[in-house]
Image 1 (cartoon, rainbow, N blue to C red):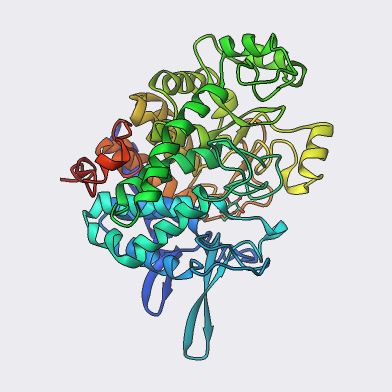
Image 2: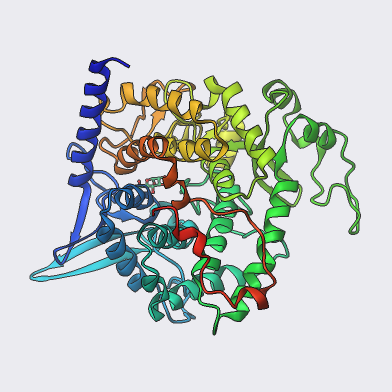
Length: 482
Ligand code: GLC
């Protein structure tokens, strides 16, 4: 690397940090989060709010840089916004839910926080991912600061318990996965991801692991037992039923249907004709594979979703072998998944009739735009985290180099359009905070892989609940920042 490169890398990072400072949201004089985008050239809509999922990227980089107060304030304030009472009013958010976003409202001298649980959002989508991200972030805070006392406070224990109850207690179906409506995560518009989308399952798995470390067993024995029961079932279910590679494609190709009973080889009754074999057969490399987007009754959505696959690697939801295969796929299909801007939110885009039927003709989600095959720079940090986890850092270095050459010149857009991500997203905000934070975080994770345990876990083994309750916290997770 030349001296000039170093200087320019440095100045891009300085610019990024200045933009992050601008995005900090203050409430009663304390920093409590970051706004989604600080773009003064365009009407803010709800981008002047702090989104829980968006803040995670900022929070992790704040934790790495020792700015832990913002993260703590965020965790405390959002916890206050969580509904604690059981509601019988259909228009009220359920007990335990976390908002998609919140804003600071000023009335005269008074300031208060107003949450949005989806009741103001376009299409009234439910932010299922928020409470899962919240648990993951609380655990990252504890890993970074060793401040166990925060998680052990009764209000935090109660909040965690409510989230776990919401996810584990009453439900309709009998899968280990979580059943959710469409648009319940980062893709918060209709995109055919209702049912059991992988993104929610991967976040659920990581949140269960995080909660397992944070919950004090005494008084929570029932929840701890439920977590210990669920984790291995969820992991096995995803590894088996969501996996796609050439071997599996061959099996599905010859699936029989209409099988009854427990011995069915095709338990979800996926009709072999519903899969795009000839595209997949061309696209799947010999040594690569990935976890598919969704599995349900007669449904197997073969789209590749980036965030979901990366979180699956980082959290150990995917096996070691599967994780390596996912990274191989990214390497082999680089032009499709990374192209000129890392990285595709999902691949391929829905086109033609399928686009019309599945998105409801959404003009923002036309093929190869926004959520429908657009490229989102925030995903760079997830790629880096997965690359560190699998020891494939060369891939992340290559992706960062591509992003670094453009992002600041394009003023840090929210997303890019086009098959290769060459066009700045048609309606993309500039100075999108998670684009900026994601870039900084991606670089930091590669520079210092010891930060990975903020979002990753030790090897997964479930202790019998009764024995495990003798321990309060898995101490190993506190050692990394020593
Ligand atoms: C868009 C994204 C969503 C994000 C929000 C704020 O709605 O789809 O994931 O949280 O913008 O940036």
